[in-house]
Amino acid sequence: MIRKSDEYRSFYLCAIKIYVVLHSKKLKPMYKYFFLLFIVISTHLTSQINTQLLQNSSWTVVKFGTLDGSRDLSQSGSKTSLWKITGNTLCIYSDPIFMDIKSCLDFKLEKETILTSKNAGYQIEKLTRDSMIVTQRIDGIEDPDKIRKIWLVNRSVIVNDFINKNKAESIVATKDFTPSLKKNIIFEVLDVYSKNGYFHDLKLKGNILIFPKKQKIEIETKEESKKNEASINLFKTTLEKNYHLWDLTGFENFEKIIIPYYFYSNVGKNENNINKVGIKFFDDNDSHDSEDVAVYIKDKKVSDQNFNKGIEALDHKKFDKAIEFFNKAHEYNNTNTDALYNVVSISFAQNNINSACLALKRLKDLQQTEGTKLFNEKCLK
Image 1 (cartoon, rainbow, N blue to C red):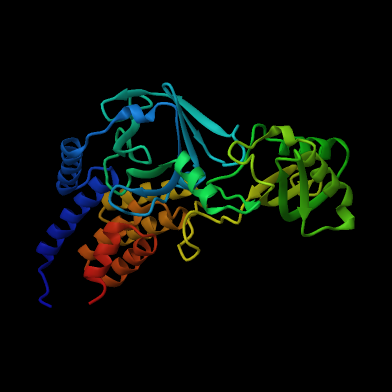
Image 2: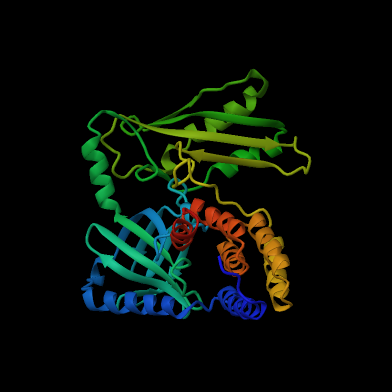
């Protein structure tokens, strides 16, 4: 390889520095603006959306992603399970069982956009009786890898498909089709535990058995301990006596509905003296496959501090130090992909292929489209 002169190298590094700073401030290269413009124009020209289909509808969220096809790294994505639209109100439910855990927003429908505020909303890309695709629009977020894309299926389709496939008298509910609680009764369990001195560190697995025709509930526990017998019995009786709190719409004709659960409770035995109780349903680790790299935020504040230090190091032309800070920013928050893209830009400018490819490999593992493309082009030679 022909070595470039120091003067040319200095000019090249300054050019890359400008790109990186613009990148960090969300001012991407012009080709990304053209990409977005193309998406907006093509969507407008090809779509014929009947927004009347939104009225009084329920939608099950089946997939999250981003506009450019990257994996959505936001931790809130996988916690959204259901949309319900009534009139001009959109309610987003984060749990398929506890229907009181929700966020409701008034919206205004303008052409093909659900405006939830002056600065945010959802642009409808596709809408039929059976399915819907929307992209989240927030002022100031313009990069294709930061714009969230959501796929939804009409809940009636999920319900009909489930019933048609399950002709047996006993069925196992799923997160997409399950009876739901009108009230979160688990807090009642914690309240009784605390008031009556049920000190324990309790973990249970089992099934909730609902019998619609008999109008009764039974609780199975696979791991019982006489040491915590009183606490276990309280958990059982609290759920068994609250049949009336379950919404069994669509399940009336089944003899038995099985809902797998995992229950945990720590009362009066932890170091911080904080009582905790919770319950999870179904064997559902995440919406992603188990082979996917886990998303984590160790310390967002520390991550942001290191990112800002990286920008400051760039301002002083301390490129190696900038790489160090950007890598630390990603270490404390692996959803901070901008930090990795900055490492890539600086490393390639310094002709440090190893450093660039290490960052690109992380982006590839996180299923980021632009990073994967660059990794395949630059690092697989």
